[in-house]
Length: 205
Length: 205
Image (tube, rainbow over all chains, first blue to last red):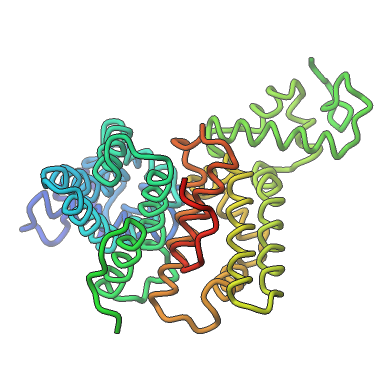
């Protein structure tokens, strides 16, 4: 499939019935796959166009630069995470706040494993995260406040940071790629709850 | 200070008494500082030369490409880590193996915080790590074997991965940059020991 003109039609190719959102989603899905295979650095707009069977101009119609694609790929998971932190903060008891946050955080990590693996190995994705969150400091401090309160002692703060970083990095670890979502979710949650002093939920097998 | 010719003398500039190893160390120190300020991606050989007050040719005398500098910057810490894993494996009891590994791992992370922060945000440094270790799979599996035995259940494996990733990432977290080494070391160790079921060493304050 080839396309000589820029624009939505060029990307949609033969399936002209697709809505523009589908086209955009297809482009982002292809970009994520190529990013995970070659890294963000190693993926060009031309490669994305080739994989979709369209011209580079057709890709430009949707995104002006690779950085825009990186942001768009990461954005849904980041917004989801942001919403989870806000929801967690509405619970009255600290325990319920932590539970809500851990459940949501682990779930987002596990459902977006490929993306998370990229997050942890590519500065481009990290920059996209900062940009989407309009200064990740606000997000990070909201998140830490839910986990350890507004004025934590250093021990609690270090534990919380180890927990979040460890969950994210282990969740995206290619060595665990063949573990199914439900199993990985359960083990990550068990570990996180143990670290943060929450009672065990799943009986030992 | 300027230098018009390539070579060791050019970098040493006025302090001609320095040994070549000192020159190399000075170059690597400057590179690490620039990497941490601008990222590996954002640091050019020219910037390193400028910061040292020498020509780019003088830098080329020691390193043919930026990738070689990245590797050389990371190499000592990686070799140290590799040695710690081997030493840990020589202990007879599993508990002593884990203790040795955690002490060493946390210590290397804390002493190399700037480097570790780079590790976790730059694919170039990650590639250097793989290259120096001649296939990090061997290193990783040695390390995991010490922590959880040769045939761990999945729960133990996930916990160990969360621990190592969390320690490394939290240890390099710029938000904890003003915590002194000894304090950070103690808190990271406490967290890691708790996760891996090792008895508490430091009494609660």
